[in-house]
Amino acid sequence: MGRKDASTIKLPVDQYRKQIGKQDYKKTKPILRATKLKAEAKKTAIGIKEVGLVLAAILALLLAFYAFFYLRLTTDVDPDLDQDED
Picture 1 (cartoon, rainbow, N blue to C red):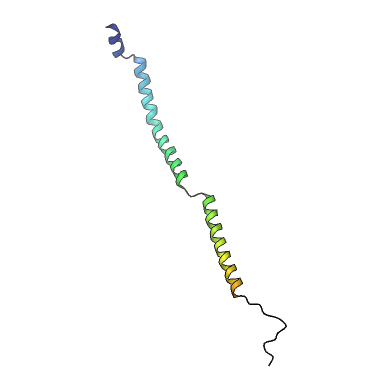
Picture 2: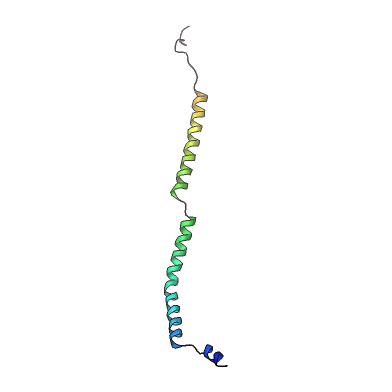
């Protein structure tokens, strides 16, 4: 029975350590929150790579559009033939 009684009584050193641990946890909790929010923001933020890829895709699409109409609308004009001659 002596062991049960000894386990229920906490030493003052253990109580002090527990109190210090709680105080440290309270101090670091906002820091942990800030770190967590920063990690989430970094995870969900659009990076420079993604923006560059979107801009490159838009530029390629515009270039293809321009090339299609440039090639479609240009006509082969023979410089030897003069249309003003009657």
